[in-house]
Amino acid sequence: MRRHVLLAGLCTVDVVQRVTELPAPGEKVQSLSVDVAAGGPATNAAVTVAALNRAAARSASVEGGGVGAEAGRARLVTILGAHPLADLARADLTACGVDLVDAAPSFVDPPALSAVAVRDRDGERTVISRNAAHSPDFPGTPWETDDVRTVLVDGHHPRLALGTARWARTQGIPVVLDAGSWKPVLDELLPLVDIAACSAQFPVPPLELLARGVSTVITTAGPEPVRWRTAFAEGEVAVPVVNARDTLGAGDVWHGALAYGAGRFDLPELIRYANEVAAMRVRHAGPRAWVGKVGVR
Image (cartoon, rainbow, N blue to C red; front, side, top):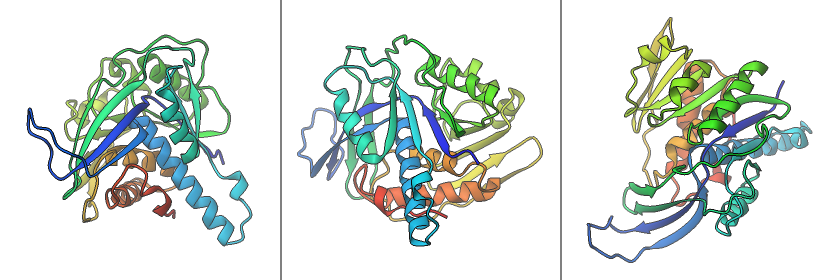
C-alpha cells in the first residue's frame, strides 16, 4: 500500500494574536498571547497529515507492530523563497514533521503573511492575508515523488496545482481539492479532481461540479452537518458538538484528515473521521496546541 500524502499549495507566515474582543475599526487592543506559525490551506493540511502519521506510529509502537519507522509522510510542495521571514515557516514545519519542498527557493520577495486575531471566548477569528497574490515561476516538476497514495491541492499557486493534479492523474492517484473559494484555475483543475471539499460559500453547486468531472462533492458548513453527493447517492454527516476555543485553520485540518483517511474508510465514515479530527483542533487554543493530542483509528 502506498503510504505518503502529497500536498501542493499555499504556505503563509501567520502572526496570531489572541484577544478578549476583536477590535473595532480604529481601535487598538492588547493581545492575550501571540503565536507565529506556518499557515495556509495546504500547509495546515500537511501539518494535520504529519500529526496523524505520528499518532499512527505511536499506536503501532505501543501495540508492538514494529512499523513506526515505515509510517507515511506528509510532503508539502509550496513556494517560500529566500526571504528571512520564510525561515519562520520552515522551522515550524520541520518541528511538525512535514517534508517541505520549496519550488522556488531563490525567490527573494517576502512570503505570504497573514495577520490573525482570535477572540478568546469562542475562538472566532479574523484573517487578513494576500495569499498567493504573486506566484513566481519555478523550474522542473517538484511534485514528482514515489509512494504517494493521495494528493491534495488548494489552487493558490495555479501552475503548482495543475502540474501536481495532472501528474497524479497519470499515476492513478486520487486528487482532493480544498475548494474554499473560487479561483480562475479551477476551470482547468476541476476535471482532474476526484473529491472536491467545498466550503458553504463556494459558488459552484454540487451538481455542476459533478458535471465537470468531479466524482465526489463534500460541503462543510462549520458546526452544521457535512453534506456529500456523488452521481448515485447523497447524504449528510453530523458534526460533533464542541466547546470551540480556536477555529483558525479548522477547515484546513478537516481537509488534511480527509486526505489522510481517503482510501481507508467509506465516504460517510471518512467524513465522520475528518469531523472528529477538526473537532479536536477547535478544542485547543493556539495553532499547534492540538497536534500532540490527536489520535488515530
